[in-house]
Figure 1 (cartoon, rainbow, N blue to C red):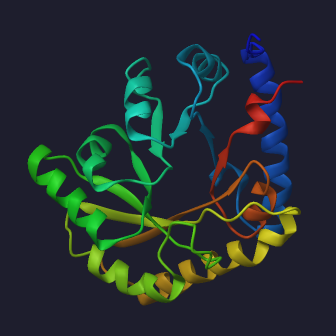
Figure 2: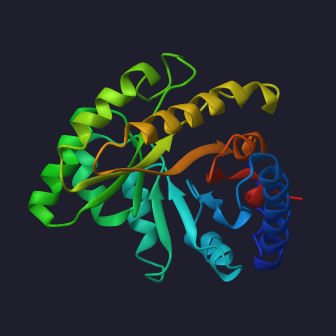
Length: 238
């Protein structure tokens, strides 16, 4: 039995879907009090081909995320320097050197070990890196991330690495039946962000809250997210 061929993604379809996303973000921002233009829509391209991504670029998309370091490296070489790539999947220590050469922001730092490896990679390559600290606000063991109660201590240790720059927080919440069920986890991250800001730790910026995916991004933006990680609304077939 032959596999079913994917329907080709067209730039005009992408523009229409992005318009819907931005309209929903605008409504959510009215509740959160933030400006809609400050919310970045990151398109996750795991498993997608270079021609598919090219249609997104032609439609005006400029921010993409990859789950795997090697897959991201292979793709970004086909695109212009103004295309921004983030790592949104778990980072292994052995991939730290490759990651800082390829990604403008790493969303998934959740241990001192990873911070050490990123600093060591800088010492070999001379390239600094921007990170988000991944927090596990749900407390589910199968999810990556440092616990909220341990996040401040981790940040105080990570900031000792002078070439690893903390830019905010990230959360990847469990899949649930209703988007509204995710609100406590997103709210917890925002409140933690506010707490860290008040601590005024030198060298730490809390510019970004990366939270919300295709299923729950509206709730995430209502709770203060300014980076949402999107897949299915762009790639699903009509």
